[in-house]
Every structure is written in C-alpha cells, then in structure tokens.
Image: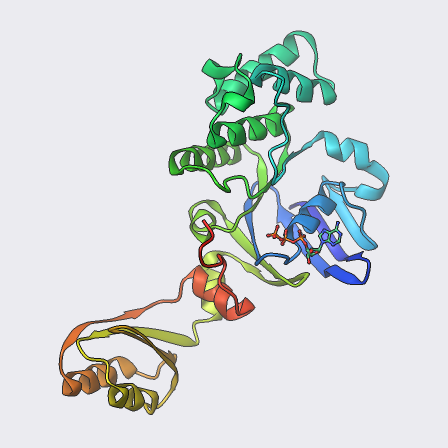
Length: 314
Ligand SMILES: Nc1ncnc2c1ncn2[C@@H]1O[C@H](COP(=O)(O)OP(=O)(O)OP(=O)(O)O)[C@@H](O)[C@H]1O
C-alpha cells in the first residue's frame, strides 16, 4: 500500500521546469532512497510532498488523503529533516525539542516524555542542557533530526541529512534511520552518497532534470544495465598497440586507460574476458585482470551521464 503518491506533478520556477510530470509512489514501511545530480529536482519534490512548495498541477496524496484538502492533518504526521540545519542556536537542545513538540500540539507530561525519549534516541540525552552552537556538526545534525521526530511522525522525509559530518556521526544517523524504520516509520531519504543508499534503502528512485528516470530495488536497477560487461585490466606497459587491439575486439564499446589500468566495456555475452587476457599476455606483463558486475554507481552514470559526486566534493 502506498503511504504517499504524486501523480503528474509539474512545478515551474519562472520558465524553468523543476518537476516535469513526475509520478512517484512511496510504499508504507519502506526506506526509499532518492538519488539525483545537483539541480535534478529532489528538494523541490520533497518540499512539494511536505506541503512547503505549491505545485502548478498534478495530484499529491498522503495517508490516503488529498494534500489539497487535508494539508494540516497531513503535516501533523510528517517529519521533515531539511538540508540546512534548522535549530535555534540560542535555545538548548531540550528547549529546541520543546519548541518543535509544542508546534505539534504536545504539552505537559506528554511533551516531557517525548523530549526525553527523542534526546535518548538520537544520543543527545547527556547534552540536553547545552546550546547547539557548542555542538559538533554531527551533533547538530542529530538535533535537527530529533526536532523532526519529536511528534513521532509516521512518514519521515530527510533531505541529505549526512552532508559534511564525520563518519561516526554518519553511522549513528544511518543506524537511527534503520531503527526508526524497524519501528514502523516510512522514510524518504535523499543523499549524494551512493553507499548510504546501498546500505539502507529498500528501493531507489533516480531523478534527472525534473524527471524520474528509473526506480526499483538496487538489483532491478542494476539489471537494467546488465547489457554491459566491465573488464578491468592492469598491465606493466599499456602501449597504444595493445589499446588498439582491445578496441577492435568484437562487442567492445569502450576502452579507457588511466596509467597502467585499462577498463574495457563490452556488450553482455561477448565472452571477451579470455580474448582480453590472451591479447594482454601477448603484449606481456599482465599485473591483474577481473570482470565486474555493474554497481549502482554504474547505473547512475549510464542513466544520467553524470557522476553522482562531483570531483573534490566530500
Ligand atoms: N526557489 C527557486 N527559484 C528558482 N529556481 C529554483 C528554486 N528552487 C530550485 N530552483 C531550480 O530548480 C531546479 C531543481 O532544484 P532542486 O533544489 O529541487 O534540485 P536538487 O536535486 O535538490 O539539487 P541539489 O542536490 O543541488 O540540492 C534547479 O535548477 C534549481 O536551480
């Protein structure tokens, strides 16, 4: 059953089409990973779903209700972790949670209970009296997540919650997301980090230029590009003659070289591994050879023509 869906959503900023007839289903109980290069439209999609951005046309349903007619009711059961950290620097961690809990109508003992539980859950109980300005980046992120959780939403939307934090805090956040999901929370998780999607998402949606261009489990997505085989070869002397012989093999689509490493992409079933090996042996000095299955990174690159992470980006 879908906990939320978008149908034929169009969103323009002036003449720029940020969401171009997007259809999306989010199943109850899943962790859906949302991937896309910069500017693909992920944040616009997330903000539309959370009711922060009004769309030009199309339908959005959340918890079986039309967003148009039940906006407030829906917002009460959604948690949104924004890309920017949105906590008050001059309130303590506890006061921040009290404030956000209050917005959702929690008060008295119930509010106190939820604040205590949530601080414990994100590992900030010992720091509840401190100001976020004194926190590390990772702790600020955890507080940001706590603010979105204090009202116990059924559906949590997270917009790149691990950008710019240390690996330990990142692991903590991923564990928190997993635990929330085991407790029954549906999660829409946007990230630039392929390995995070691989670690936690039950399904993946890839966006580019305002379109959903592929969706499915990681295995299903990888299957889409199984028409390619990748062979990695390392030789002592990668001569132009060797590269030319590899390029001329039947079924070879691409040969690339970086230093001693050569990558050969062939059509699936071309059986080129043996041929590559014998050509490389004739040339002498084979250091290593391996055939690899495509990864989610390869799927992304094949479908969007872009690397997920720009060079130099963290
Ligand atoms: N308020 C706005 N006004 C004008 N253009 C906007 C606005 N918000 C987003 N855009 C444009 O819409 C497109 C989609 O932006 P969006 O932020 O949704 O992409 P994104 O996939 O979240 O990118 P990133 O990974 O960089 O956050 C981009 O070209 C962006 O410049």
